Image 1 (tube, rainbow, N blue to C red):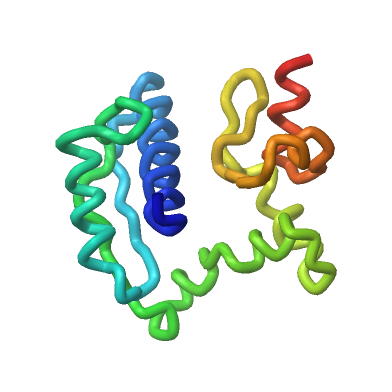
Image 2: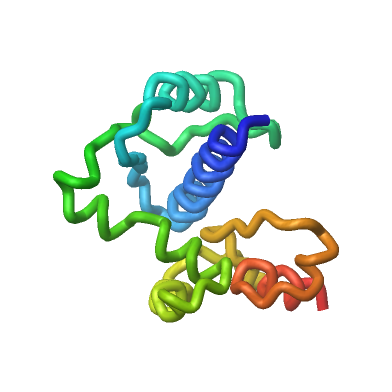
Length: 145
């Protein structure tokens, strides 16, 4: 599967999971996805509609996202610039230029009751994940012990 589509499916699924948890606690809000402009806008909107109708590869349909994603030019929106994942990815990849950005938001990422972080997905080979110290991989290892 295309890496962008896989990441988008993971994002939609995790966001829907988070909103489902809130709904179970009595918070009936639905979510919106706002993404940076891309040439793939049409294909991602189609995918989002398919996730609602047919479900994701994990078998569950998306129920808590209110609409298809909205796309804005991040150069025109400070909020979109703020939410840009690039600093987070740099931190996960151990880029020394931005070591503290992930540290600032790590405590705000969604984690299940067993402590597994679901708001950050670090895709790597299984053998590397055994020793990776990023918050996502570490939380999964700690939950298994």
